[in-house]
Length: 176
Image (cartoon, rainbow, N blue to C red; front, side, top):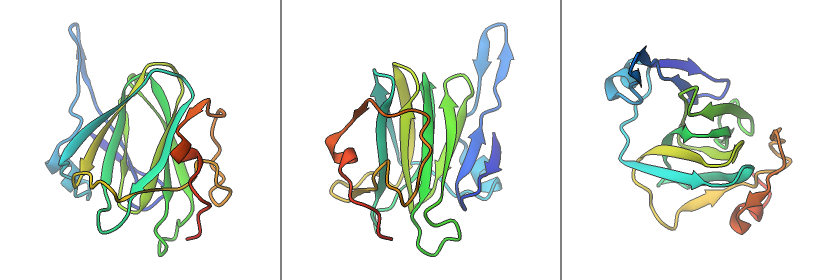
């Protein structure tokens, strides 16, 4: 795996390095030792899958409130998504800034999202599946979020979402 820092502290692009031959490809997607060698302490406790049958479906921007904050490794296993991370950590030099990466089944790229960073995505094609590896395990009732179109972040989404949950559409303006 190849780790690249982003301009948001603690957010990394994680590129798989597939071995290809006549049979196809094989790639390691997570290894605690390789993460530790890159300075990223991450041992997932849970794996979740988001199946999205429609293009331009937006999910986000989500996070878990402390003391139940999560770290996530997010990748697309089928289709393509515009994946976004927003820094909500008040003391961070990149507070209220965002980064985005196109994740796809073809590019095998993942984003590592640390605690205090909201996450969301917009599917760029139908039948897009997003795989999450999460630590610690999800804690019901501690969900939080910020609105995908909040002017505090001015995220430059590549398209207007066509499908979004009522909850995600109604998050209040960010006040942090």
